Image (cartoon, rainbow, N blue to C red; front, side, top):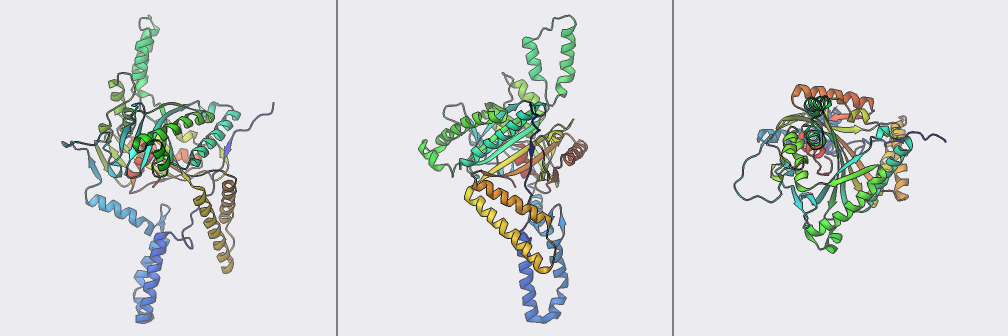
Length: 486
């Protein structure tokens, strides 16, 4: 019987092209203003006046050409300005305050732009979802499980990879799914579930083994770090307006449409080797958010729950305190840093290339893969624009006598392949990866970040720490909100 090779994946070349001549919008605006000012200066005062403004031209060139952290200085300007305004107005510190007036039912009391997000329950009382009035979305969250991918046969691995791609394609083609988020995280384990199981089904009276097992639970169970995986699907209420109206309108109609989507998702993910173990209820969604802000709360939430499931009141889902710093945030009992996956492997690699990152020993982290489906017409227009830009840049280099760029050749080939796939009927999605590293102290966080970055380099993944925008990045990366990327 012929052996099946392990499945491989290949990511397209990530374009770093700007709007015109490789310049971003901010760079183009600054260059245009500087050019207009130079023209006016030469016309009114001559070359002497232009020479007198040499420091201004030098500053403009520095802001456009000098890059830090993958961005030009002018592109950093709005990000740093917003951070400076938040710092000046005291918005880098967020405190939960008791409110005496009536509050909206299900409001999660999250900081920042997520303050209006609330968890709502369907009329039948069995389904719950996150309603974001700002983004006009309704998001359901499923807890998923799977067998260990690294231990599967190559044939099964390949089937799971292709099954997941078909699942994504099916969701993207519906036209009313705004975002799909896969969230995989490690959490501290209190050992409460093991203790409950031992109390219900164990035999403590066994002379020797009973005492040894009980001692093992006391010492080893709290040190475990189980993995949790969630699938969040955001329904675009505007795009699904017709379907919602046919289902009765309002949130009840939206729940009907979402339940139909959730049912099809539960069937489709089985082809990817995944199993939906349950769609989260309102208390479970609130507990998932709460434990992201305060990991140490997991033990208490499990012990207080009658059935052992992690659950809490939605009003207590948000943090008690959140402090924003340049490259991290502090929330309750933990400190967090968010990384953006700026580049996936540039060469064909195995499907399990993230194994070392996801199983770094002693590191508490969460990984979010955010898929944003794109409409066919918009994707084809984007392909045509990219092709025209690549060809125009190549023609301009030939006119100047410069050599061709191999990066442009690879990008053009990827763009043509993308166009062929779109014409063949495949759905188009944009992928964003965000990785959150958490620890109890700054020293532990720095050590964990160094370990994760080392594992990422070995996996051919380029991580970039997000600066001056950690709160927004944390909400995207660590919470199952299925929000679009920064």
